[in-house]
Length: 420
Image 1 (cartoon, rainbow, N blue to C red):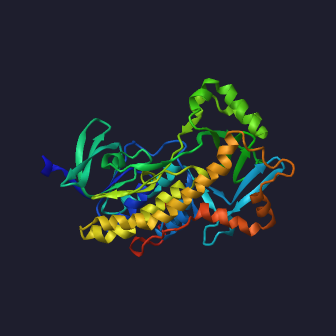
Image 2: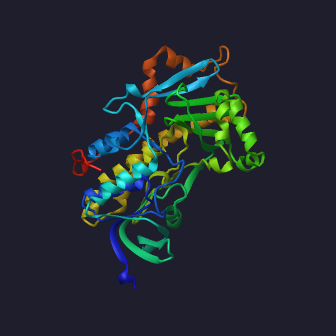
């Protein structure tokens, strides 16, 4: 029966941003790629909806810029913090280098559908929905493929020269391989929900911290995508207080939202993000490589997790394309991917840990006064007001990242202009 197993060049586990980008690029290199996604579609709320400036540039390089432009999206040009003394701008994406001086917000399912459509135009690309990986195949100590189960209960085996684990922070592949992450403690979890946005409300991304709480409002046009910080592990207790207590909590923290909190009808409208921050010490083993959240779960601080995951995928495709074409992928090839992406990952996580310790932890524990009151405007805000050019630094860290990756020459295309 083993000889009857299906075969592919690369099995990509997980159809998220990292998996779809890796699959598309490797297919353009002529490598046979099969992406396995356990869900029937990409329609899931409160997934990361940010398409960063570096990713927009990547889409241009892949010939997908015009196609993306037709997908309804919202451009964000500034990041702001709301103080008792008013609203202050901390990040100005308009100061970024390159053609995209903004970030885009688009439902992740639309972004993934765009990548899937592009992949299907490649002869060696295959995407299987409703296909959940349940375990790994191993031969002579080397991962040689996956076991899977489809939605109708059918089980199967797919052999592969390489398994790319792009299945998120609870990676089945990483666990099955025996790769264990180093966990960094985090002070908070996040409630995600939506509230109506009025025409005269603040535009862009707005943060509010201090006075016993923290909240981010992401401008999606006619509504805000809201992230409300709660102390780690308190979700069940706070939900037991009832939905009215939730509405009062939000209205008390951001009073100008008080007239619309009843848009959250029940706890079903409030999704919990169990925040984790970790990193595998080693991202690979013989025949398997972890990318994105499977290798390094990021905090939501800065919304940069998707950017790092996509850049991991681009680096992996560029480094591994030739070994895969030659059917000789060695451990040192996989190690090169980790070496390439290690510094931007560790530095970004270090900055996130600093934000947890200096701002978010004290804010939600009530140890930080309501910032901006009286003469206590934070130094960072004073610097941003006095020297506006400094606002490019946070904008660059969020919008582009510490080591942006570009499409290799063999993956580039002229803009594909499809009439739909």
